Image 1 (tube, rainbow, N blue to C red):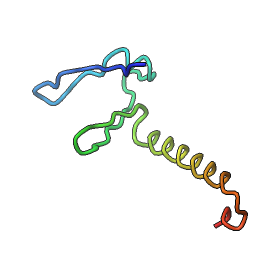
Image 2 (image 1 turned 135 degrees about the vertical axis):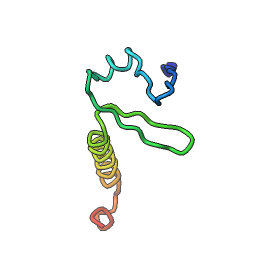
Image 3 (image 1 turned 180 degrees about the horizontal axis):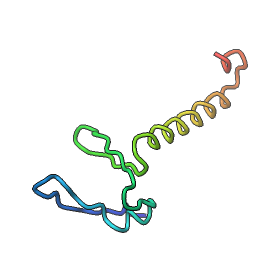
Length: 80
């Protein structure tokens, strides 16, 4: 499966357009929020803004932590 790739240009004022296929896929309507995370030499674009990104990250980390605890066979270590 290939990763979808989109490209846009930045205007003189620093503005750009979010491609329509991404807006539709992510359910972003006019006035909808997106977050930008600076990764150093790349930027991550997240639909829903910073609050939604933080909530999703918390959910993922909690689920992975819980799965990790469940995988520990030693009951004395599992509650540490």
